Length: 470
Image (cartoon, rainbow, N blue to C red; front, side):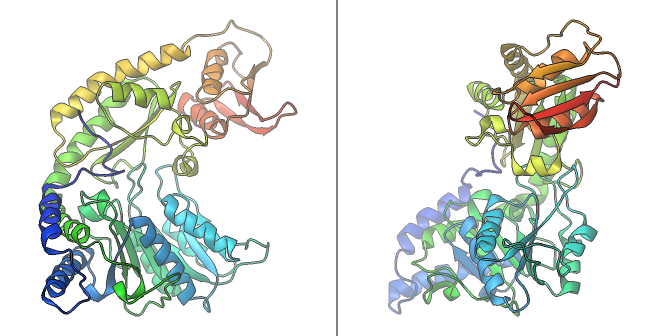
């Protein structure tokens, strides 16, 4: 039963399991105590910190362990903003950051701060020059409508969690250095494959992304960065992560990080070849598919593609029935029925979205079977939704009423009627599904039709106008 969702949580590495079991016997005492059991626990904690710091590329006293990667992000963002409140109140982030970073930004805005969101291109990468411009004073408007002050902190992920695109961290770090703004790098997805590029001021990560146990995060803060921990604090972990350390999990996290990094070069090259095979073969095997993310500058184990005319939830369920565990950024699999903020920021198709992230040890046979199963599953889902039909030709404009219909029905209805209007004619689609704002323009780009625009509809939702060009 192939598990293809390592970007969400990688299976526990064998080294992590061994270290966890050993630490449960040896590391249960309080590492702050001076008696024998406490000293033994302290030695384990210090060794784990040393190993993690080596993998990150920092000093041991710059790194603390947190209860999760999300907590590391929130602590890093709030602490850096508080420490630099005299420099300004602006937080600069990319539009495709992990939700933990965006939620931290929302909390900052709710407290009266300002947030500048830097757009990305269709591969999901920021432009370093655009990011550098966003660091300038007055580039944002605060929650009360007042101009934002100087930038206090910038955040940029090392690689995107949904499409795998690696960000130009080194170039952005240089821009931040020139502007005197610290850069927080969320390295959750990439740290198991190698250290973050030089130039970061703060770094966060999460152990369950590289095969460590859940419930362990890393927060590294370079010496010299102004930092004021927020919230409850105590004497543990430099006051940045209060509470009794989960020492067995910390030991397992550090041991597995060292192990996966030792394997990264060989395993990364092997998985990259398998992902290249998926990137190449899926568009050949399945009609109307868009592979998204940078084809070169990307994580070695992750590939994302979107299938037209497919209900994402049904597609994932059918793949699960066939034994494949995959993830999706499609609105069709979301309780909010809104497309992934990453796909939306990229301006790419969201319907029928599939993220495949291969864990260590994935075999060529696993990938070949996935490629064998996928075309039939997509075809079955499309047939079930009635995709593929066409409407009779007409000489006038066509109105498609898709109000109350969810992804991917508005696009399916559009595809059925576009051939019925003459070249130069238009189709207007009425839809109130949030995903239509993304999927209809993306469909037009994929099919070579002209997206004229959209406007509010008197009947509710929005009216999307498409002109047939071929």
